[in-house]
Image (cartoon, rainbow, N blue to C red):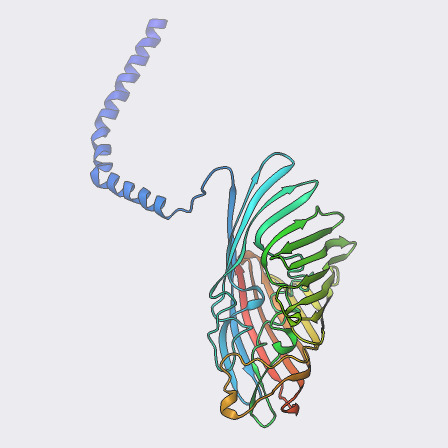
Length: 421
């Protein structure tokens, strides 16, 4: 029986060998010189274009966003349109790495660069190609961190202070368009009712930005407890701040917010020193879609001899199924800021004030009022938000050279999109 089965195996083996011999030449022809050369060339090309990690210990993620739009404005005499980077959350790319040391400890890094070519908060009637602070490429984050699940995280390097973005609480997803820090069109120059352009901008009141600037620092983030965490930073010898952040769901309500305090004594002159108290809260009632947000900023002396008091409100409705692509957010907003009196009016953006003979002198007091509305369409399948907004800027100002000015309002329409990757 054994001999018989062995015989069968020999017959099958011989047939297989004959079959392979008959087809071998055709395989040799198919995988001959040209094919292998093309394959090797393709492999070399892939190796040259593939992003690689420096080691296998640290997990690295590449992400970012593109955020641009078109700014339409009417200052009472001139109407125009500018393509800009939306500077509330401008285009950027980042590399975030992390590694697990043991079950309790981990470490990592954060490197982020902003691409800001034509900033929506810097363009004017006379300069439509203004790069953001730090140039077209602006370093936002360059730091390392080490974290304990029980003790919290320590971060060292260029990064966000405890109060960075603390006035931007957004529970509803209105954020790409509705935000407290007015960074769309706030460098446009106001005109008098007779058409003469001035060197006054709305950022005379808001100071260009209400946000707390990133800087070189040491930062501590506590572990999260019941949706709340404590954050403290110190940096550049003369700056420190503290904040409490909160994000949680209580029944049918989604609540996010934060409140913080900072001191910045960088600079020799008292007018360059800042003490600031600010925060925000946003609440969404998920069953109905109704939401409301509030933010405030008290800054003193903030480079002037008077404090800045600024308040911001928005509210609206989230419709999760108005369109099949994602939720739709409708909102209205209102803001009021008073202060910055005593600051010399800065001439920016090449405003031709010398040509028209207008000189404001010193701004004794100023009040800025903003109201507007808009809609944001979320498209989760593309990690995208498309939006359109309208707002009007009204400035009341009294100066040493001109007295009380009769200024036209500035009307702004902005439509844009943000896509994340």
